[in-house]
Length: 177
Image: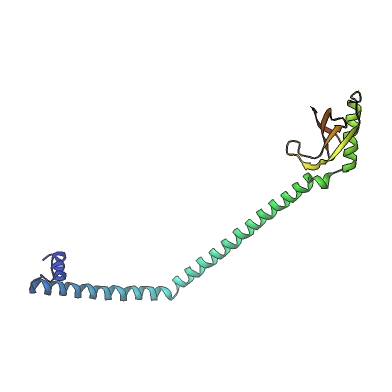
């Protein structure tokens, strides 16, 4: 007899007495097999619990802990090394840390440059302090001062960038008004 067909009829309530008996017998056999398998599995686990299993679990746990510690130490070392490099880079490129000329010296250099190179232009020279900044220029990799120098009559405006370490004139832009 086919168990699946008989079981379906058993569930539907259309099974014959013979089919009902067959299904109940098969279910009883399955329960008995399940008990036997469960007992065997428990015996195998309890035997393993006695020695080798516990040692293997302990060894695995120890390896996991050591691996985690080593990875954490390496990560800390890498992050620490990167932090040291970043701090060193910032210190070596820091505008305030490497400035060898003052803001006032840079202002005087800007004025002197304009006076020397554009002396023939009429009008007096003044500096707009509002445009004076110490910046870190990525294009030149050094700190620089940026000044706008104008003639008082407003005929020309000069943008002068000065290297904050050396005082060298980096860039000059002249605008006609």
